[in-house]
Length: 324
Image (cartoon, rainbow, N blue to C red; front, side):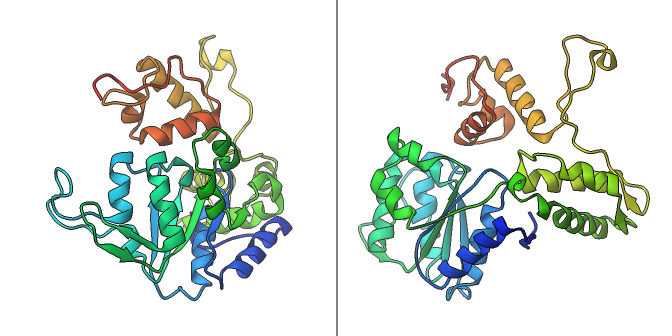
């Protein structure tokens, strides 16, 4: 996404007010919101508005790093701490000293690591893997998730004490459908940005195209809108952007010449269809070398989170392949 927060809707203004209130403090912040709402942008805004702005802003996506490697990524390790550890590695908590550590997708943090994270938050100290030396750190932690952490606590997927420590100052980002007045501003910003990058002679956006964009619900939020505008700019040939809107209906069977085919035309529908097709090919196996996650190039936990968000029930239990 763009590094600029675009919009002047009341919903976004409330969020920015909360940012200005919490930024000067060292409080732990929990940013919640649907996928594509700009959680990382808000985290960066908090960091840049804080007294730590001259320090590092270190990011970790807890869903993108395999569970077996995440502890080392966060806390570092000594040479020989495990097979393949040929040198000392400094973890993200050390690298973020006197700055901010942004833990994205905190809902995917494995249970076995949660007590260690809680200790760092409470005591500001930890040990590298393979070491008994205690390291003290001065880090502000900002977390983000699209998952319902309260429900995760009830299901014992998240420790209650960690949840309370993370949610000292919660900020919930509004989905794009709750701030429609920001859509024209976002469209113009993305259109001009991509036009400049691609050397396209765009000078305006057609009224019909803008009206069609304003009527969409945007399940993928700002990220989905941004991707559609990029595609529209790529396809544009004149000075006025007049791309096809993301239709909510499917093409007819006559057009497809097959009664069994239907074409998803929104980004969310395309993603859902692709995941379902991959799950069918793997007979519902998600993890492992031959599982759906590997074929899609995603961490297993990320794929499972996507399936939950898209309402996908696997045709077989969510298990790892026997070859894993």
